[in-house]
Image 1 (cartoon, rainbow over the protein chains, first blue to last red):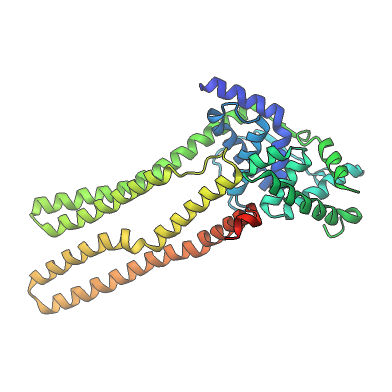
Image 2: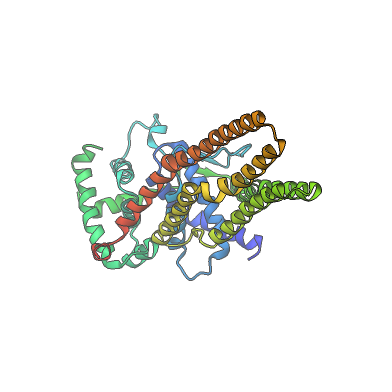
Length: 174
Length: 205
């Protein structure tokens, strides 16, 4: 694969799957600097993984794999110093960053509570929750995590109850 | 409120809406980071292995020039350490986790790497300290023996012994500290993660 093809695929993935990447990042890192740091790592790994992409896996499955594996290796507080790096993104995704927005929609609030609850889960459960909320099939989730579909079912049952309990009463205890 | 409501709200969010990306700068950054990462790994290897081989050349050359087999022995020790590092890096590079592996495979590869790092640091005495230290001790011992002055022999040996013990203890301690502080927690983290990826059927013998 030449550099132009790699760049074209990267641009297309960025346009089509930016939301997916950001959901994983926000589900794994809490503060904006951590999120920015992890996001840069995810982008770097996705870029490096493109030459190995043969189209056998779905793009979303591939990106989930790369993003989760990057989040697995990424550790909070170990930010690499990127000397002289240029700012390529304005990372302003938390509603707290918009104090002028007095009213936050109930759905947005629920989503924020979900992010908080997901970040409290063990890494595997957090990955599973992110994919399940996004509506991936059991087969796709099994491919990403490398476990059987049956076991996905068992884990999801527990996870759904756990998340529902945590968010009961508008996110008590979150 | 049930899980379907969560899914509905989740899928309705526009996660990318509040992020502005300059694609051109991003591409430049991603390329630069990828190159920087490759360069860091390359120069780290060159530095560590290069020093061992440079010392090997120096001591072997010195041994040949002065017809002193003990210096040759030290050079051989340094060469052995360098060769071990090269072989180990080559062997481990084939086991590197791949970013697009499944989470389970990636965690298994990472765990195997961490275990190997722990093994290396715990055995630093055998593959790093002794191969260089033992020939150096032989070389120093023989030089002192040949001086034929009992006082200087005793003083020299004591100073050399004490210096070696302090230096080796320091290196050994730093390595064990790195194991305790960084690698053991990482190993536990990966083992927990792998444990949660194994169903009850898989974990039971």
